[in-house]
Image 1: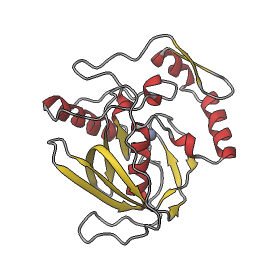
Image 2: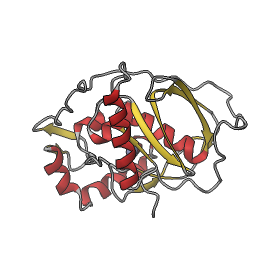
Image 3: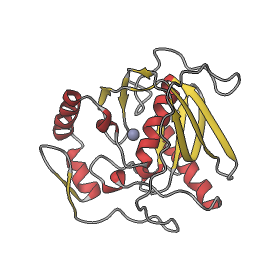
Image 4: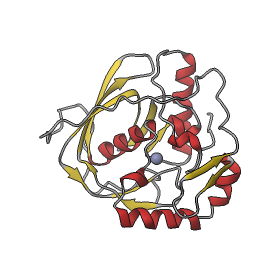
Length: 234
Ligand SMILES: [Zn+2]
C-alpha cells in the first residue's frame, strides 16, 4: 500500500493539463495502485493522477462497490443533465451543487493498454466528468454557478487547510479570487515519470444523447447517490 499526499487547491499541478500515457509499463501499474490506495484511504469516490502530483492522464474511481481506473479517457456526454452535490479531495470539506451531464461514455485504456469503455449515469457519470476535468487542469469550482463559486472561494480562504496549502505547495494565492499568484517552487517531479505539459484531448459531447444503460456494461447507479466526489463518508 502506497498512500500518497493529496495535493490541495493552490498547487500548480492541479491547474496543469496532464500528458497522455504512452508507455503501459510496471511504473504505470504502480501509479494505478497508488491512486487506488490513496483514494481508498481518503476515502474518496475518485482520484486523478495530478492530485498526487503526477501529470499523466490516469484516474481511478470507486462507485457502487466497483473500483476501476481509466487511462487517456475521452468522453461522450449526454445533453441531459443532473444536479447534485459535489466535492473534491483537493478541497477538503467543501461541497457545492454542481450540474453535470447525466450520462457518460468514457473510452480509454486499462493499465495493460487494453481498450476499455466505461458507461454509466448519475454518480459514476459525475465522477468520470470530475476526474477527467482534473486531467485538463479544470476543477469543480470552475463548474459552479457564479454565486456558488463565490461561496466556495470564501470557504477556501476561511478553510483551516489554507495555511497548509501555502506550506505544502509553496504557492501564493490571491485572497479574493483564490487564483495562483506565484509558485515559489514547482511540485517535485515524480522519478521516472515525465513532467506535465499542456495537452487537450477532450471529445465534445454529441448532441441528443440520452441513452439507457447498456445491459451488463456497468452496475446500475441509484438515484440520490450523487453525494460528492470527494468523500464517501459524510
Ligand atoms: Zn477532485
